[in-house]
Image (tube, rainbow, N blue to C red; front, side, top):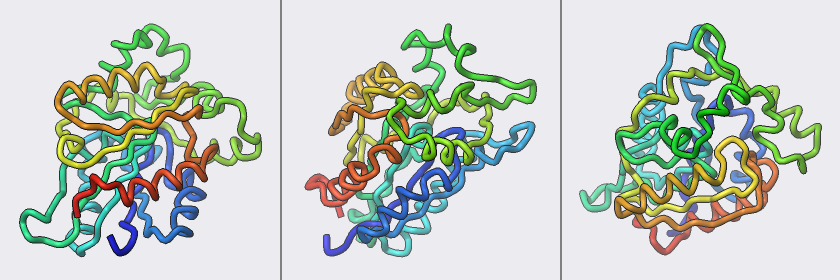
Length: 254
């Protein structure tokens, strides 16, 4: 590949694009063009009105316009963002330029078709602890009760944590029960970054999901990091290097 692909960076639940600004800027310094769309579910609207389907459609629209412009795309998906893009977009077989060449999941939900986030929570046995850590308001919105603990492992500078937490919003509880529809990981080369100190998408969740998608024939390259859920902040340099590796992965089809 003669140049780096365009990155479409899909943020997580409760997050907004400003939370990823430092990471996006670091990717741009390396030569990536970066788009970080604002997911409709993370608008802070009360009561919440957007759904997982709205997020998928929003991301798909940006992916489609990017590849139709002939650009190659590296999808980088963090946390809930992993469930917000579910289609393959490989155009070479049709003689078309552009396409999604790689999926990079950062401690993200990688879900089999027809499954939900809540099913993973239940299978890991965390459903009984949900209300201890998640605040669900009467309007159907949620927030992590202690986001500093939920997203960071304690080794981040407090000023960095405080800045990150100011960009968070409430998130619709209904999304956790919505079924996914696609399986882009079956047709697009995939790398999964697994995090050992993750309190938002614990390692047990990650292992369950990876086992499920592998049982459906997915070939996923897994890299483990002794990192927390906000590794795009706390291990930013490593995650930039990971993106560079994914961009030139020998499995990529361009």
